Length: 171
Image (cartoon, rainbow, N blue to C red; front, side, top):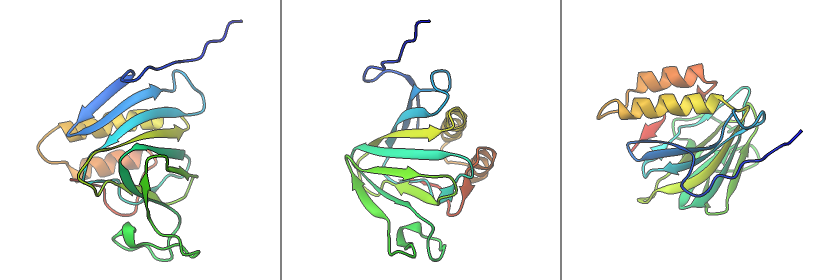
């Protein structure tokens, strides 16, 4: 039996773009039984809000730019995750190119671009498939009008194992 891998050249893959949010599917459930891989451009002002997944693992690797990130259970969950502190004293970090964040199931986490320039990251999610559907839905919501419908985003997140702790904000 012949087995082949996959090589995805720069600027290749299935690309979704809406309101400066830019996601390119590099490896999908069609290719892997273990993880989906995406290249994501994070526009200035984008903040995922603190959230967790009960079943999925995620990996974020900053390629360009800077993102604020955290991945821990805080002593206290407040409105602003950027001020959270873990029982061990961990706080959100400013993550530049080469920084990696791994998130196991059940771990609260978030990232935000508080700079005036887009950031770019490689993002992996396991199991594959779910984030592919999620990105299709999210970018459709972003493209549907001048403003982002928070109820539509909340519904989408609930149906894709995204348990929101603090709100997502866009710009």
